[in-house]
Length: 173
Image (cartoon, rainbow, N blue to C red; front, side, top):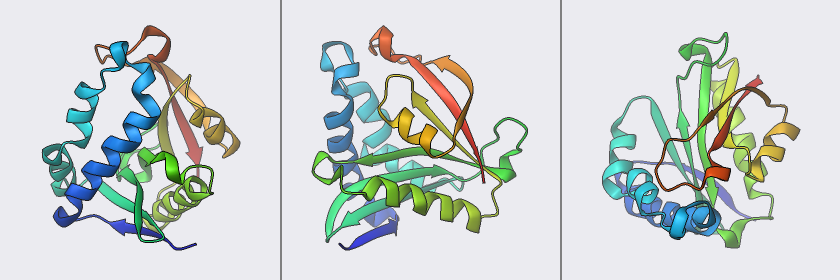
């Protein structure tokens, strides 16, 4: 199995937009009233939004490529305070999204290992992730050693009430 994590530049924006839209729709359509994901898709996966992320000094995006096919993406906020850790000491994993065809193949685990390696090479002492309480990913992060330090509700209009609660989680590296 060939697996690559490609640091994104402007040339990767169309591929990021395509795989991000696909993976999000496959995984999260049911959390939105009327299954209307357009607000979040535009905010997160439009080419304009992704280009802004790439140009921002505090974000890093990676295209996940499996056997020469775009499989998903990773979005990292390089400096992000959490708990007692200052922004320069901690990093936020904003997204690991995989398209359905690439789930249950160990790619998510390898992507998470890559993120931890990236954090350590940037001398981070902690990793932060925010995850929906109703998400299957919550159990993954708990098994990886993350602990919940707070909860909050998403403010996006259109998300069903039962999917609004988020857990802010911390992993000491």
